[in-house]
Length: 315
Ligand SMILES: [Zn+2]
Image (tube, rainbow, N blue to C red):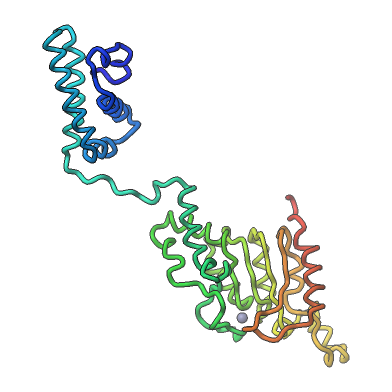
């Protein structure tokens, strides 16, 4: 069988007077035979174009005329007729084309779709932050039932379609969103329950409070964060470090004094973090507990920015 490039090389198409559309179809047949296009694509080109179908019939008639006039051209004519006949058979096949599969899209296109999905809320006037706690935590910390940006029920629907998509969608989700936690306990629980996701988390904003704030903050050391926002309030200084507790057993003056931010439970663990390029300290929003002094916020932010942005050991 002669394919398009051979027919062109041997000048057969010119000798047979094959029309432009006929040549296009013979090239499509060659592409099909050399796996450049699949059967469904060839079928679409024949089935949905009256001009292409007519070109096939016209090409067959041309071949018959040339073969009748010049029997020496029969081998080429037969080959072209065979190609056209096979294309017409493919065009008549009743099989439905393969469905368009999402995972067959290039990754750039999939990312554009994720971007569209995850930024809809921000476009509607929301933020890219999401609160992940849906239920009231058992730790007794403040819980923001009417938090400004709860995770919407259908926001991660795409991630639940299959395991391969889950990994990809969650990775994009974590890169695009800041995960917000109403206390350190909720953050710890989330990190423990989502071990697969930990490697993908990039942005965290947590309210520094809770009975196990030190242990929770310690877990942040194993993440690869791009940004960390620490929200401080009076709840932050409700619990103190073991060292400060020891001091207070003996220093009666300390007992009467107000707890300083530098003695809050978790301060040592917070200062032990590193390798986080963007660090901020903020006061709670209007839904949360009363604020601490602004000077404390600025001092802590300066300190964390100086220490936490340092590279990790060995990097
Ligand atoms: Zn808590």
